[in-house]
Image 1 (tube, helix red, strand yellow):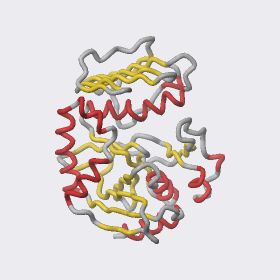
Image 2 (cartoon, one colour):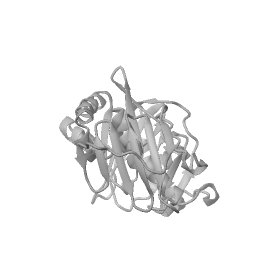
Image 3 (tube, one colour):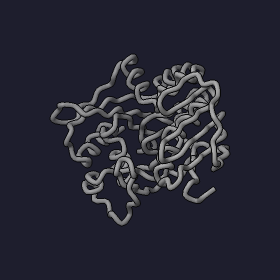
Image 4 (cartoon, one colour):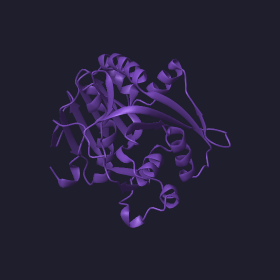
Length: 281
């Protein structure tokens, strides 16, 4: 395989990856939209000008790059929809979230795009937290206890965040071709999994300072479910969808969920300080 197409799925060993001229097809899909063809154990996606992808049984991946395709763009989809599909096939629930270990406690930060997930992961990591994942976070279980599974070894950051955190630009890498964010390598925790103990649900609101609250069980369930990666895929994977509903209940029975409504323009360091104070034992 060309060196630029070697996705390192740190939390997902046992995936056979092949670069091919033509990917296999999902012949009898349960769900189809403008980019996916899906059944419970197969996933097919074509991105014009980038690549075609085929994943099966959480263990096989085929990639057919388009002529002249940007390898960075291919890897974006590999670490996005394709990785989510492989995880869904294995029934490993995964969230739009960043995560880290702070004071020996596993913390996962969820929120919509722009809420501050990556900024908080970077801010905590720069202050001694041990980084686990950015943007996509799988959670598996050991005797019903939820564990964060590391995926990436870099964080994608906006220019404004890099400036606010005074990150040496020489330590950043190329920009994400879709979002324009820069890749920032951080010291990884170096663990295979870590117990999940806190979930922070970040939101932007019309508030003068961060507001912390503990949502009730139903609201917490709804908020957590809304941040599962590519939930629409599960329309073609009914068994996985049913399993995830049980997994969400297990997560909520073991973790403390904290909703954080933050001002839109709050400095990253200030938000970090407020959250760190709230999390003090």
